[in-house]
Image 1: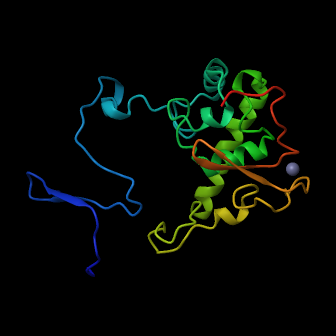
Image 2 (image 1 turned 30 degrees about the vertical axis):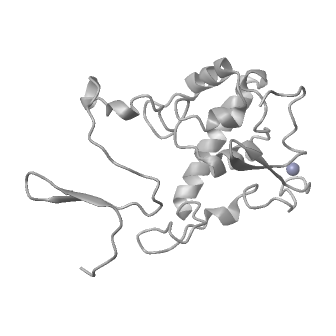
Image 3 (image 1 turned 90 degrees about the horizontal axis):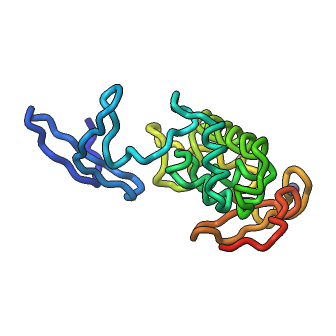
Length: 199
Ligand SMILES: [Zn+2]
């Protein structure tokens, strides 16, 4: 095996094997955890609060819609909330909101159930498409096992397109700060909330 620079930490296990943690993006960490009681061995306690992702057999979009409506918060904030639904990151959220024609600052309570269901459906589709082509890599460090970047970012309709025409209506895509991240949206197809929202 070629010798590669390995960043991260490792531990020798009781059986003599070595366990190593290598984190390309350096956001991660590791620790030992207890399991919750439950079917199929339960979940590690520290992640038991994390909601199902759209591919989990336990995922129930109709139930998520009810959680969203009870939250009464901005829809993008709710979509990124891992206790509501997990697996939807900032870029996927922007893309799903563009497809569902919803402004991220709209409050969940004012969005019809059908609109919320459609948004969840779009979020799932976005993730499926991203996985199919290898993710939204836009960082040289973030590559697949063959050392290749993903190409999904090239097919996004809002991310990376601020100042460029919306693929649906031609209005220029706008970028704004939201939750310390960039949000991109079409000001025409994703209309602003009718009343001013608290933020
Ligand atoms: Zn548009």
